Length: 312
Image (cartoon, rainbow, N blue to C red; front, top):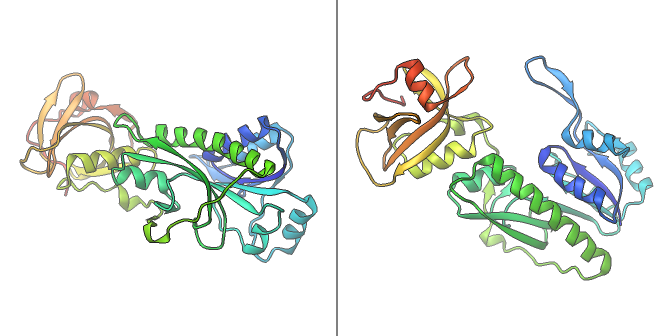
């Protein structure tokens, strides 16, 4: 099939890679405009754009897609069989969705109808889900509510963080996408309606989501820390300043004590904090204007002692 691919971040790169290896032809790539990144604020192409250029695929980066007649006409001229959308980052208007013969499909990183919306991977991990997944669905006007072609379930392990889970879902979603495209082309594809009564919404992550409430359970805080490891990072007050907690391990899930208190030092690993229910071993931290260090180095370098307190 002739495909126009819509995507922007690293998550979408895996799907574009698989498309380029498949029997389907990528006519063009639509991605977000380049943005400044890093300390130098240098303009950087999106990850999807980089891959498209490397493979000599035409790239379009409209600043707006709604009421953009020139862009709409360009898409029609391409005569696509289908649009594939993977984390593009903007809502696509109905008149564009319906241009291709087989309309528009999306790779969504949750087991729909749970976790519709912008941050399904983060929210599934923060909510303590034991499994999540990826679904290929048809895009309609209502957010993430279209008929589902197929889903793949993925276990969320304690050893996972946002990076490992993201990568697993991106790879599985890419493979599932090719299968669904093959099925659509051969006429084998079947769609299932979503049960709207079971839907949940994965609202966007904000910096405020990172603030640790030590009265929560060790399990809940552990999930928060690993889900927000890339951004905004879980944070807490310590000695009058905000520090970021990058990694932790659950020591127990039932003990009670003084909430937020450092109750033990584990040589070679870090320091243990009492939560509302259970204890966490802090294994990686980041102090203000400093790089990420191990919990052990934090104990040694900042002379952290039992009895000190984390939190407001």
